[in-house]
Length: 60
Length: 450
Image (cartoon, rainbow over all chains, first blue to last red; front, side, top):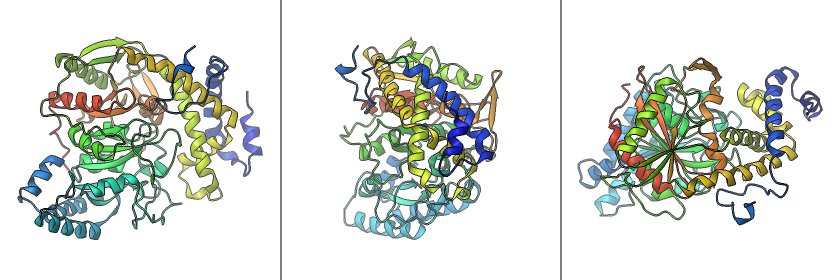
């Protein structure tokens, strides 16, 4: 999993240290949820392109 | 008064635009010190516009369905020559040199603009407790938030200062304040209404829309701003006969405050009594929509706002944290969130094979108190922002049209909101269903006493 504190320190400008307790936990939760979701989609899934961008190519 | 009633009074010479303008300005002057709904009141412009519209009418010229009707615009929507702050300190002195497309469309229909309504800073939050322009207050209880981010528009409509106001919705910012303030809010299909001249926030999540006192007023406004408008307006006796309405049996009925759930169940029964075919439906994973929606929103907003982080003191504390979070998300995660979004959209779109419309609560709670960070209900404690957005954000992610409208009141006399959702481009279905339910609920005439 991502070391968000290290990323925050390396950012330009760095994320102020006093904000880290508010910044990091939400990112950790979102990352964990995304890893599960992205692992479950077909390899050939394209980017979302609007509510009507879903067509025959999306059918498995 | 509704838009139709105002139009009839003006065209019937029972009222002039000048008289209505003076009355509106008097009401705004009286109410705004308590509500803080407006950041800017365009008094001189409104008077000049009213005089011109009266002169038009005297010559038999009717500019359109909004001829002489008072409206207001959310302050992240460009108005030529009138400052447009986005509720931020950073844009405190920004004066656009052009109108947003929706501003022009409503002007062309004859509207009189009374000013710019307050919002959560950058439209990036749901309390509308703005650190730079003050907390906007809910007309039903001045100690409570109106919701947000379009809190000023909702408060102005609920207090009957204007019958129609514009709003924007990235994760629920039209529907949440509509729910908390007991007004009607329409988030149209993604890109059905122009965003040109609307300050961007979530680039693939933003929607421009409307708030009004009644479904029929929202329908009239929508007919003026929609691309490929059908011109549909609900008739005097809208009904639900034959409409296939789905009621989720998962997620949207979980962790709901008891009074909200009770009103929602009663609304479902009303729909059935009006002739709808109501069926329970198990949806794919709506929480997954919220996950990818939050990742997309954090990334997209920071792409726009991170450039201002050299002035961190000019951000409110909550927005600063969100902007810092968003700039740390790798591009690979953003792109994979958008791929997951497409896969989820494919799964969710299958529900429309057997349905015309979905019904859900608009928010799981009624309006929290100003300053409350968490809410407790049904043995659950939840962050206010998470609670307020979790039933609305999924439809920004899918881009489907959604309407929030009042369906009841709590024991504390706070409005309870219902959400109707339809397939892309099917706003007419929402407006038909909304009008029928509004007639049946019989609460559209209930207003806060200020």
